[in-house]
Amino acid sequence: MEGAYGVKRRLLAAAALALVALAAAGCTPGAEVPTGLPLNTEGSPREIATGLQLLVLLTVLSLVPAILIMTTSFIRIVIVLSFTRSALGVAQLPPNQVLLGLALFLTVFVMAPTWQQVNELALQPYLQGQISNENAYNQGVEPVRQFMFRQTREKDLALFVHLARLPQPRNQADIPTHVLVPAFIIGELKTGFQMGFLILMPFLIVDMVVSSALMSMGMMMLPPVTISLPFKVLLFVLVDGWHLIARSLILSFQ
Image (tube, rainbow, N blue to C red; front, top):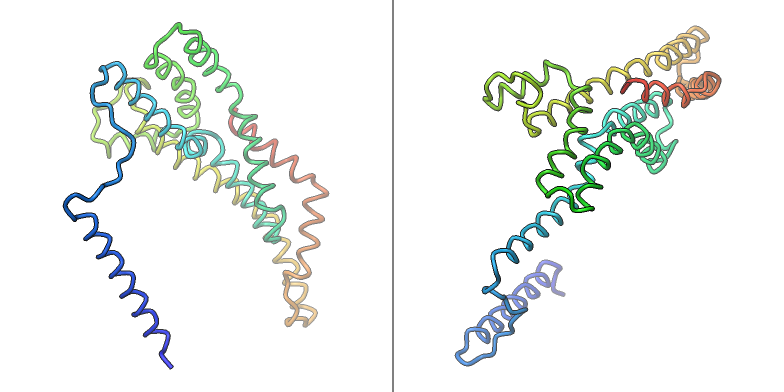
């Protein structure tokens, strides 16, 4: 009986023969080659510019999730919520969908004033035809830049200005957006980890107390997590943990 390796070799050989046959048919003189949509190369420069603008718009729309994550409060919020779930010791509670949904709606709540300014300064004037595309972008990105500047440390900005080999900026307008965004991201990561550490400490103390109590009673074979988990959940519920975390997250951006 032919082994699995031999069967794979025969299938690959058959596929190679089929590709060769198709290539030979395509290279035969007089063979009809299927054509796609006709390309109109006689369009005016205005039509070409419109097509390029549409292509750029579609590209930006495909990057909207990344832009939403990297230029808003979502980074800090989702990190703190993830630390909270890890501190409780319950791997799947709350589920990922609930955790991400809460992070998303808290992000909308925090970013609502900024997005309202973008709508008033850029989106509505552009839809009414009062400003051009370039002016709409410049006016719309400014409130987002101001939000990121408020949350970004000077140390992080100085790092990326130095790495980009830019001259010493005199004001915020001299710092380009591609330098501001990574500085904002690493600042948010540090702040999120700092808040997560403070959340971990009370639960770590509960684990240590339970572990010491079990060792003093000679119950070393019993996992401390089994006993400490109900106490950690009870502690979190009694102090109204989700209320405190949501309040702390929102106030940290003000």
